[in-house]
Image: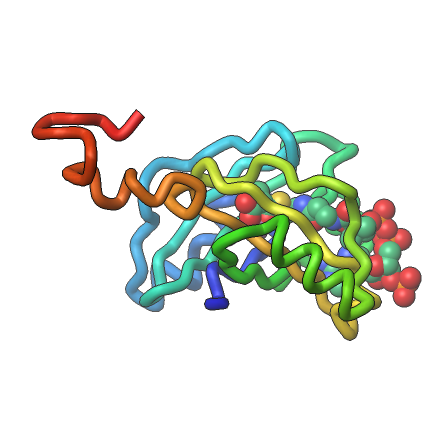
Length: 152
Ligand SMILES: CC[C@@H](C(=O)O)C(=O)SCCNC(=O)CCNC(=O)[C@H](O)C(C)(C)COP(=O)(O)OP(=O)(O)OC[C@H]1O[C@@H](n2cnc3c(N)ncnc32)[C@H](O)[C@@H]1OP(=O)(O)O
Ligand SMILES: [Co+2]
């Protein structure tokens, strides 16, 4: 399991970007909307991991509610898993408490789920599975699809 990203809550993506631009990082790709979470997202790659800036789009979103009670800043840490359902089952065996029964859609076509901050010793923890983990052949399109195959 590797660190995938840290999530930063900000009322404004441009204001939230300033320190990362000054540090010398550039946004990776265009801003993305994740409707299921009611957020607009800007990502900065930092080595193998990312800084994920989260701006609320709706007052009922988790980020809007967080910013009502807290200052902008570190919101969650996210860990990349190969098989999110297997990892959930394993962690439930360790007594983990999830915030939902089923994972949902995340950034960049990932599948994500959150653990309760109480279980996380005071931090909100996200598990995320990237699409290539669901379709390993997409990483190796030459396998079984012939030249020019798209893997689907
Ligand atoms: C871009 C998409 C995706 C990705 O692909 O990466 C994302 O990252 S989306 C990120 C935003 N989405 C989420 O955070 C979804 C999960 N979060 C939630 O369901 C809620 O935010 C919450 C964690 C259940 C909190 O809900 P809320 O209704 O706001 O309850 P409270 O304010 O009463 O909080 C309860 C309890 O939890 C503590 N808390 C809340 N947020 C955090 C946090 N970010 N880090 C640490 N602790 C947090 C809060 O202080 C309360 O504690 P107690 O007072 O001790 O009970
Ligand atoms: Co996240």
